[in-house]
Image 1 (cartoon, rainbow over the protein chains, first blue to last red):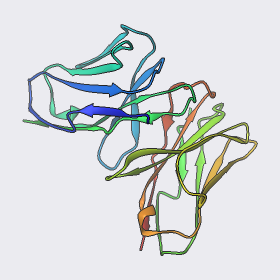
Image 2: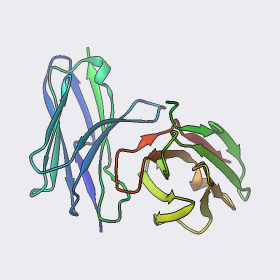
Image 3: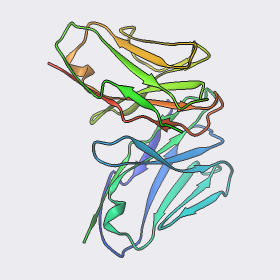
Image 4: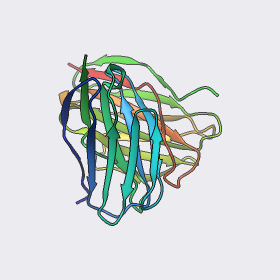
Length: 110
Length: 113
């Protein structure tokens, strides 16, 4: 069974702190996506990671991919309140359909 | 370019009824996928259409169906609604079938009473 698991499911952190969200997947996938979803809103694309060792950074977020370990990380540096949202990773197995992770609900406290 | 649009945004139906949701993809995008999002099950893939043909299908009963028109617009239909069908239904478009970045619409929130 295809599984995409994220850890943690819920994360409450103080502003200014660093933290990492993990995305483990059980099937081979040659790409991995990270999305952000604000409450009551749709999904916004953050990163596309296309190869082993890929690293992408945008502002306080940095994503990386290890295809051998089937693991992606989303690192948050010096968190700010505006980063509060739910973050999803998604893989694309050979059938091309997206398999989404469980989501990580992040709350950044002032 | 205009983003993905979905209509209606909110819908209330009763059990046993049927519903049709509409999605207009980004101009030039030929692939349209549908997802169901619920607090309990998360984001689940329903189906994907490309060039008016269903190319992929998730594990949903036959009550869930869809179609795509020649202009890439897509509709999904749910017949004989059940309480458990209450969810946010998201449509996403991408240029082609090759697993590229999907751009999501605002969703249709369906409540079944």
